[in-house]
Image (cartoon, rainbow, N blue to C red):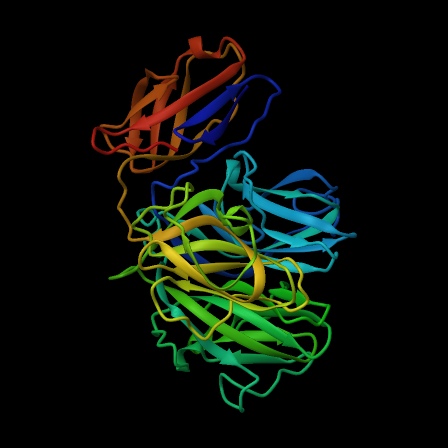
Length: 489
């Protein structure tokens, strides 16, 4: 039978009776996507009963794929990337966890580490892989929880999807301050509190429908978890971060705007809460940016620079100058920052290079633990700056960037159907799904043109001759528009 996988430059089909192989999407983005927020929702929890999105607990050294689209959280098959929160509950130590699009080669990056075995969470924007799945690798046995707060769709087929508007990193909430709507007092155990984002000093407009935020919990003791969600809605069964060791802990999250533009926060135990903002999502307009997903890639590792000594103070990082492929047109990056401190680290801050250091923080490692946090970092010149209060190594991985939408510059293949055909079948009509197709789109199978028998902007029909179905192997299907516009998926 025939099964498919997306690869860089084409859509591959595998025909056999038993072989199933999943996909590698393009490693460098060609088309931008806009954001659709959802109320935070639990996708997978391996502590649950055995199933595709449940148990068993992943074993050390194993890779497991999770199919994100489905009715449980309302995520469509057409989603190009997901905004996730990844939580680990290690059985002992966890060297690291890595997430990436299913079917792509496992990248040399990490999403989070838990060397001391603590429950830990980190946000991640992960491109969709084969069938919409994402893969998770763990070095050591651990349970994994995946929560989702939004996904990305092509603007041409989803005019309701939101563009991203970066803002200079800005402190929005600090409950350590004197009492106020976005200030004190400290949150009490079991308390839910609403924060009116639009009333703050960060100049967020009322058109904002979701916020790119960084949450820092300053517990007074162990903190079971913090959860955040749109104000005015029921508290969802998700968590944003955990701090059972009582350490100051940060995690990023994209949070949909609730009633009056507010967000709600809940803490299981007494804790102060700090909230910083680096951008918001609103209807497309002037200055609005689209997301260009990339297979996760390591931009910089300070351990490999010069003599590999830790740094403290300021460090500049050229993101577009790395080999990862972020375009010079990028105006913000989706990064994962990991610190490997030499001593206890007060905090790390990242911000646009060439601008004044803002009064915000990206992560904290007060106990000297290896610590990661996702950050959407605006840029003016393709570079960012980082400041560390104490000596540390810094690792930066990228999963995509935000830039002005370039329009649909050619066809993009997202899937094919039917996904299975028996060997020695007769001529078969195949549907290529995606967008950007036209009456001039041509289809090639293994480099040879085939007969297109129908089309609209979201699909093309072609006849697959029986001669291609006579033996086991791969077929590479490519869609092309006349020059200068050409894209494959």
